[in-house]
Length: 639
Image (cartoon, rainbow, N blue to C red; front, side):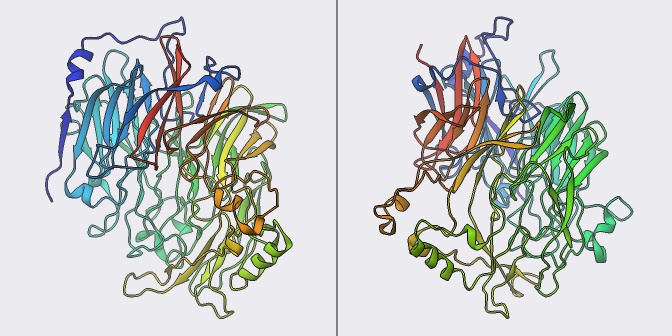
């Protein structure tokens, strides 16, 4: 393997910029930063800024654009980065090789670029994307660092002023995280796609793996989470998401299947409570996505929300949200930490949004549910060799924020003729309530799979939600999109008995099989667990509006098959329509969901929006793309 090389490109602008004293935070409120991916380690995607409000939001305009199309071996169309803003400088990721860039927050001028060159490690990475951002740490005495986890699975510390590696960290600024892997040495698929979390002086990194629908073997790398010393790079602790013999949870893996099963990583962002000293891990499912016969048992800590002591990595509590997942319903989002009042009692809460469209809410100190959880019987698989959990945990509150399971009532029904065509189109598919298992592509009953809603993308996904700490209202973007979950053997490819074999989803009369809305935003009062409002995310797609079967029929706003990317401020809820939607950012009334303004963008929104204030001016920055190479776009009111 070629030794990895790390290089820094310092633009001419750096020489001048290094001599300029950037604006400092002060008590006048002239500057407000965005120092963490989610706005804070609580992952609320909230800012108390209100210079942009309902009265003037319609006047927002693009004040600068930063082009990301020149980074990496090919232009990246979808950049999921959310920049940080510290002391007048934005820090973001760019290009599939995950370059780190520093950008002047007022002008959009590039200050420095750090470029990784990982050789074979990049070539072999299962996720060649720019990632969702970086992390920041300071000792408070002038040592300021930017942390990134690379596609090749290195943890790198950069000087925030220059972009140069901090040589006292690890080996010349780099820690090779592959040295601690558990699993096969000849079948390694591991990387990281979300920013590290910095809590105190600990840098926490969760791993991502390759797509698990068709793994080449049941033996895969395990998704352990690790904490590192922010100063030295020393490994402080490891949390094993798949236990070793004798450890808590090992007995939930029958036939010693924990010994060879992999994945169960934490590819979504991690959250933390600095006062409690607790980090919250949204753990994904184990290998493989739609067939679990090789790993019988409930499979802790797969699909669990796990709370760890940030200093030691010791487990404080956990809640498994799915037992023995066979739907690819990973925990995909950063847990949202929010202080609420439930039945007159103040509670420090944590909310985990999920692909299966539940918002699971717990006391973040004890792990106790805010409202009762019920273990309810679910359908049993008839796929040979599969092991099915007899029950699954259902929260009694809040109600699901999107539709779950598929019945005839979910079929598109704009007209009786359309409903009849839709009903006819699913005769060769199985349907059923939430947790109806996948089935064989060639089943004995003549069916070709199970129509599953939400599909493997959710519901909610990494885009997550936003929360208002002043009201306790949670906002979540989701989509209503089914898929056919079918299984077939492929012994020439893998030693797993069955792998995913997706089949076509019916489109009766050229329309989606499921009734709208196809994308939505839901507001939930986490003090009561009750829904406040729901609105469609996006207008009706043109191919639907112009469908001949709907001629002369007025249909409501349907939304797009896209998840909204949300940012809450003191005055507004901002919603990017999402990568599957139109290039649009909307401002909603937080109390009602009413659309107050629509701001057209150069491309579809692909990263979570963020906001900051500099020299008394509030900015909103968001990553866009799809219509062309990715770029960052900054919006502000006219001077």
